[in-house]
Image (cartoon, rainbow, N blue to C red; front, side, top):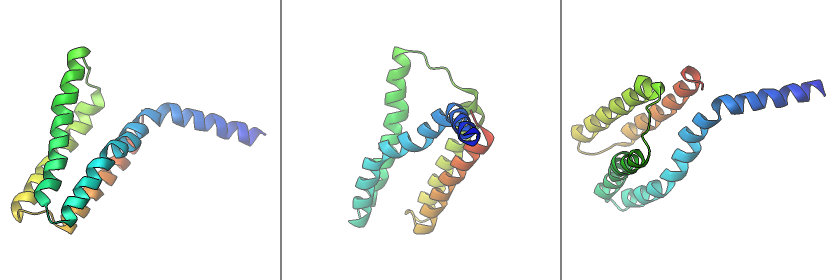
Length: 133
């Protein structure tokens, strides 16, 4: 009984502390990206790399400029310190790495895709270890 109550309280504390970040970084990100992922996979299998890359880049540009812009017009959006200290720098680093990958062979290899996927996994791990809020 005491162990159960302790586990319930620990679960509530963890949900309160990490719930928003976990949901935003994993469930929402994956859920909104699955349609783009399926289109990109089909395009890549049909050897239409331009469609795959354009789909991902176009979606990100639209989300950052369009969705964020409209949201900020409706309600000013304060930047959380974490975004300025960590997320923005990761975004810039990954953008330069992707740019480098695309210019070196004008294609994204399996190894480079693995590096990008590993980078996302490392980002998630660092996010939950360094910025638990």
